[in-house]
Image (cartoon, rainbow, N blue to C red; front, side, top):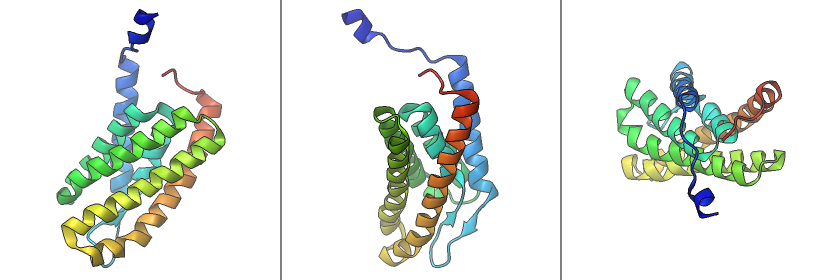
Length: 173
């Protein structure tokens, strides 16, 4: 019994490849659509769709890596390097918490709840981080755009998850 409890799943080549592809997709989706937010220092993008989908499909550990590294890399590549540490923490936490809730409640309602909480983590993470970077006014100016980005990501990630699960099934974790 003790040996079973200590047994952990090894990370295989397939896991590394899937994480790499989704990390690259997160970066690309963040870069391809960048809408600057007036009155703020950031931009709206579609990368959260991949972060939330990854969380529901792969779970907390992989999605934390995908969200943190993929999104921060996009910031670095597009001249928003000052945001990279904040993005790494916020998007990593978004993926981890959404994935954790999806693992604990593997139902449609659980996925909806996890993606809404993930979106709220993104909005609140940037709100708090930007207060320290640029002040309260600039941080507040970004909340509506970040909220729209979160709503878009919630809806699209749930639709993509449903389609992928029907076509491919759920991966072994």
